[in-house]
Length: 181
Image 1 (cartoon, rainbow, N blue to C red):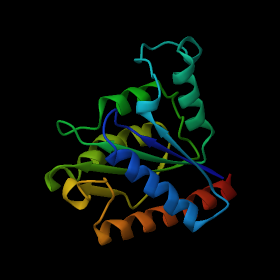
Image 2 (tube, rainbow, N blue to C red):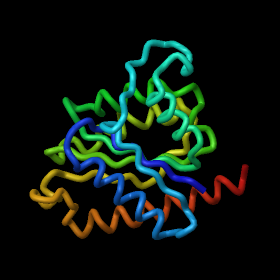
Image 3 (cartoon, rainbow, N blue to C red):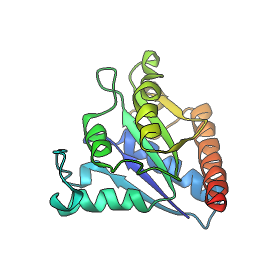
């Protein structure tokens, strides 16, 4: 079983650290799980133009194909202007219809204010559903105040516990879904 994490920010380290933490929580729940972090700032993803995937550059094709081959997906996004990041939305626009069919998808988001804790739910869940994904019943929001300001590590014990639960539930549901297919 393979779980891929997508860090949907083009700057900073908080999102990639959050996704990394979720992936390692999944690995801790089942040491046989293969995990991979896709940090969008490490790839040159082309802007969606409505063309077949084969027309896009190698980085775009590589990232889309890694996601298509995954059994489970963790999506991480910052909240900008009360929405998910543009780089993440662009990547999701590149995915073929029903790309998440048979996959469990969870998300983790962060923002500078608790007022944005439901933004990912309202922005991401319709896209995940359209792509055919099964949405993890427990997702995680992290406020900037819950990080150590110097090393971007989550210091809030309740958030760390929610991430551990997230990883365990992601693995359990992915295994169950995989055995049903």
